[in-house]
Image 1: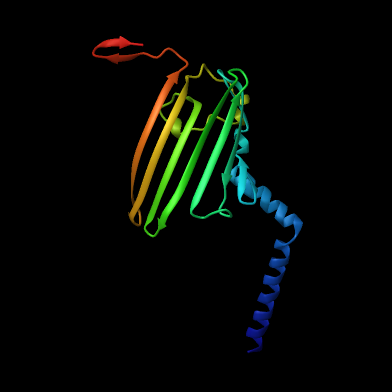
Image 2 (image 1 turned 180 degrees about the vertical axis):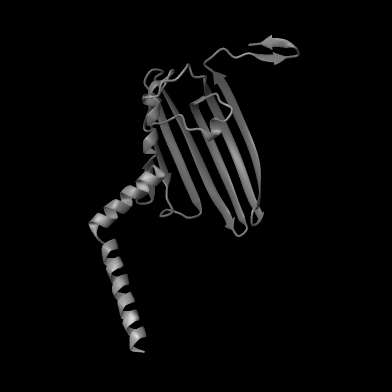
Length: 193
């Protein structure tokens, strides 16, 4: 009996020590920095700013481009998330923007609606949606001529989980591309521009 009481007292001491470490300024600062590095956003209560790796970047049209985004956190709501960002290119002197709104209808079964809109400059690529060319490293990378285009996009996504590991998505989208490069395509055997 005394051994189990000794073990319980020792556990209480360990929990108390961990709790006191969590309250220290140094721990809070390291935790904040780690969370910011992991997510790319600087949390500030119910919102966060970032992603800081995209704050400044470079491409042939805008030359230097500045981007700032704000998103809500779970401290504001666990049912919805809003992300909006604005971009300004120095060379083209144009303001671009984008946004995403996610709303969780139910958690069991998982049902969610997502609305996305953006007017931006993007890279023409087979896998452009999977790649992030808009970051600090674009300032130092040596690149061949990039195939850039203006994109205007509106998207509505509904996802529904029927049971674990089986989810269906329904997407309605409108995309308009305006390339900055010579674009040709084949229609009825004739090359069109």
